[in-house]
Length: 85
Ligand SMILES: [Zn+2]
Ligand SMILES: [Zn+2]
Image (tube, rainbow, N blue to C red; front, side, top):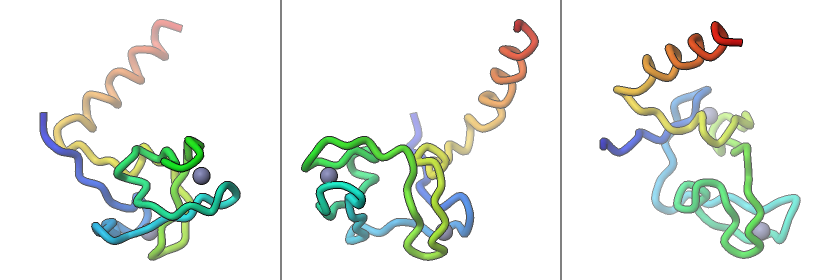
């Protein structure tokens, strides 16, 4: 399986190794949220959204992961689920 590309869904900014996010509101711990899939390693708070340090837009954490081969399949699955319901 290929490594996903991680980038801001809004401005395409890519997190760097030394990028840090603050657990706020929370325990104020600073860490790279993409090393832990959005979970604060200090207090275990799961961050569903991640703010972009470049454009300051808050986006769902999962939207930062881009799988070049999977995008089309995901859309097809969503359509199939709607058809069943
Ligand atoms: Zn925390
Ligand atoms: Zn951005």
